[in-house]
Length: 349
Image 1 (cartoon, rainbow, N blue to C red):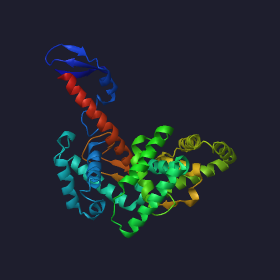
Image 2 (cartoon, one colour):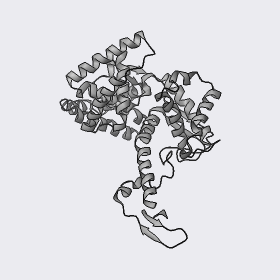
Image 3 (cartoon, one colour):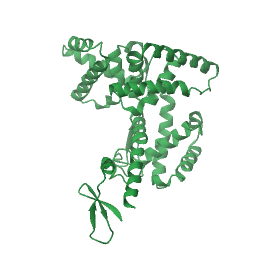
Image 4 (cartoon, rainbow, N blue to C red):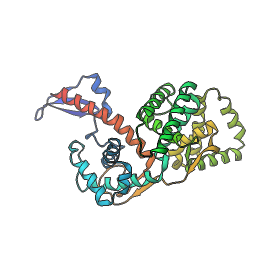
């Protein structure tokens, strides 16, 4: 007994016969978006070599098996060995040697190189914007004061003992608060809560100023210039200032302004930094920020695999978009796909 998809409906089918019976299971239909996903490591948005590169790096870092500093020091041979060792036991993810490992190796090298130079821009625009907005406008005063003192204390420990990393409890406390903030406002995706907490921790251990991508600064400058040329600067200022007592709505309104501007000017390359531009305008914090100028983009040629993301063997990625996409894929898609696969197996048994 197997299952076959017929015109968007799933049926039980006995091979070699004309027997078909529609599957009647509410939970199974709630997982319908996974019916056409054939393997756990890839869908229409994520190429399996991306997942392999992401997992190779972050599973090793998060488990303390290999530190990021060790990854940075590896030569190509050493890095390739780590990648192949990691891939060799992951049978269910359907990697083909000579194809997905070759592509993943290129992505992995770029991830390490960009992360090394990106400083705290290694955290996505959304994560950094979420952390800054929560801390500035939504954290209760007593919670904010306590967390601030804890972080500053941790900063002193890091000054004395730079290799210390025993700050899980502080970061977990921040994450819990940010999860509640996201649930309350729906301004950000829930899966960025941990990275937002980590960013806030690392940013405040070394000072009180937040960082910003140079591209976000350029976007703000272009936007302000446009408003001045169109005589809309005053109207924008008034419409946003009127919402000072409601930072959630103010943030949404400013983001809508920026989205409309990006669309009108056809400058979609600035979409990856829209969140940090939004929070900077919302909090009027641009002048206090540390501007970091580093390219977070990479383009690869001669890819071996096949996916809609690969055109004429060329593949392009933005570091922050990549991390955010893979975080969502791992925390949501993989979990739901496993649920779908297990339920399908159970129903067809």
